[in-house]
Image 1: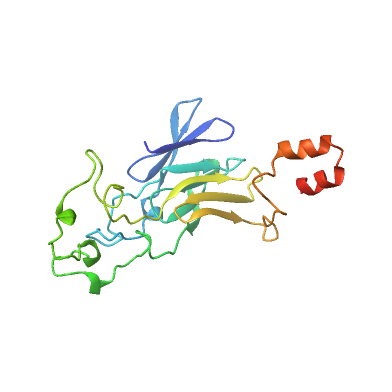
Image 2: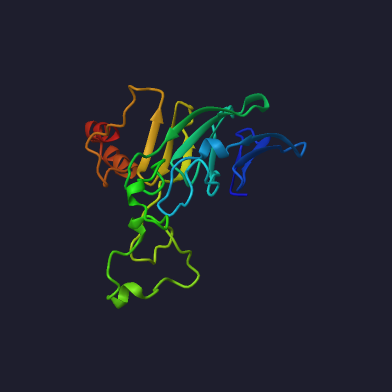
Length: 229
């Protein structure tokens, strides 16, 4: 199990597993109600050290972040890939409504569908993964990784680290008109209302609710009103 998300009414729970499936269970009757096979929905994006294409790569095709809408009609899921998928889960169905791509930054690992064949040598290895030094530098030839740390793109102890496109958290707004995703690219906000924008007025680190209450206690009502806005 990688993640779970309770429906807002508490009667159903969605469980994400390593095989890319999302299974739904009825809490009161303790039985499975639905299952979504999301391996094809979440697939896409090829890493530099992948030996197979993005369509044939079965590793990492799963969700580890999920959340429901306020009415429990839809489920939003994301994970260690460049997609966030929205499902309609009403009446025991699991239909994909839309798939969002969180990043098109080619400097991140896992955003390209096809690697440049000109960067692949005869052994099938990407030349970007090969140290371009002649081997004379002893420091480059020593293994200084931390004991027990996973090797590869996720090992922060290696000298060269390439970030991956991934989603670390997804949340819906209480109205269900917008949702946000904390990703490698930053905080992404998607909304159905195009006119709603976050445009604060003279927002600073000292502008807190406590500061507004203090100004209000000093009877500076106009200043408190401006600070509230």
